[in-house]
Amino acid sequence: MPASLFLEQLTFSGGERIPLEPDSIVVIVGPNNAGKSVALRELLGQSGAHRSETSYQVVHGDVGRIGTADEFLERLAPYRLPESGYYQLQSLQGTSYSKIVNRLMGFTPENAHEDWLRNAWGGKGLGILTRLFFDLMDHSTRITATDPADVFNLTSDIPYHPIQKMCVDPALAERLSRYFRRAFGQALIVNRTAGTRMPLHCGTAPLLDPGEDRVSPSYARKLQALPLLQAQGDGMRSFAGCLLEVTAADKHVVMIDEPEAFLHPPQARFLGTLLAKEKPAGRQLVIATHSGDLLRGLLDASPASLQIIRLTREGNLNHARTLDKDRIRTLWNEPILRFSNTLDSLFHEQVVLCEADGDCRFYASLLEATRSEDTDARMPDVMFTSTGGKHKIPTIAKALASIGIPTRAVVDFDILNSESPLKEAVEALGGNWDDFQPRWKQVKAGIEQRKPELETAHVQKEIQKLLNQVTTATFPMDVATSIRDVLRRASPWDEAKLLGVNAVPKGELRQVAETLLADLKHLGLFVVECGEMESFVPTVGGHGNAWLAEVLRMNLRQDPHLEHARRFVQGLFSPQPNAKA
Image: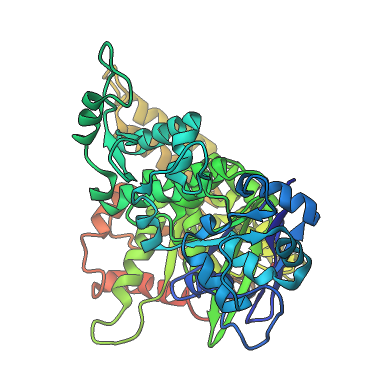
């Protein structure tokens, strides 16, 4: 790895210290107003030479270095002026370099001497170096990054601007143009013949006519007729600006605040993939984002160095927790989760896991309906997400709870049918299975002692009667549904899913079941006491989406048939569950 400066450790105002790798991609996520953008601004503004306990509100960054002074100078070789001991480092920051040196060192040299750079690398001027080699791209700087670059002398000048580097590196120019074309359907073209400035154009690259080359006046006129990138929308300019700075600017640490701004979800995801793919080796990328799409793009690239930090605020303190890399991989390797919105929960204050999409819509609609129209109370920042079945709940709950997201799960009553995944869900939410297992065994045994509503002979007779009604080549759906209903009544656990806690024999065993469900609820595992979602409103027929469509047409706020469901949803957020690693 070449000599480099990097963020070695982040210390947050809440007291957490998080070490970083020199080659890492660090993604800072969290709910609104958690301090993500402020953190990037503070990291840029700190010198890194001395830590101050009172110089930051959100985060302090300790700056480390890799390599010797000689290796550092070797990395700066492209900026060394011929036959001299000076380096033209002002090109890294344009005219702002002199201002930085003047403010911090008290003099304004035209160029930096080798001796000064050696001393700076040794620690005497490290703060200045971080300001030269650290960069923050916010909304405005990403836009201006695509402004035309100065024309330069190919034989004597150092190409410091990314657009200038596109001129001397055709492979880089073609690669960036190809990415831009995939995102927006247009090529990205440098105009080297526009006078003293070199703008970027977008559109279809003009073809060379016979006898024409890229500096021919006729070709220049064709280029000039293309739309200028600087005249396009913020989405195009921001996308291009991010790529230019990450791929072509010689920065050791690039920080980007909300790179997804102005982009549609597919473009944000594509940009995330490109940022991970195009980050040069040995450089650090720090991203603050609100976008699950951008995060999915980063995960698509599968960078081993990806580090996700979730930031939350408690009063005036900002707390941070990291998502274990193995758990990131576990989440991302699940096909159902890979194409779901589960990762978006990182950007919310709390999350509720449900078995299916229909459950999410039902409970989320009722939560909105239970909010009083006359109150000024803040709307809860909660996300309902489907896990594609109860067996996925423990894995997801463990990953989310491990980084401090208050996590709840809503499951049908038949989760009590077997030890797995009930045990894993309890442990994922921070509980001790030994505290629950004896009562669970009692409840399970009590339910299974119940005699099925129908004997085998009756089941056979009922199904045969239904089959005899079928005369069409295509099996009728209503008959299939009736057969399923017969089978459901034939199993004590299918009946329990319909009846919920009422399937438990009355008396002492019922009391055991009720305390078991109460303790699971306190942990954050909410078992539907009436059985399943459809049992909340038994007056509506059907199952799944058909049932849900009818229920959502009801007055969710006032209909008395939904009172039980409204109380259940309100109980999801009181008391707060324990979110433990």
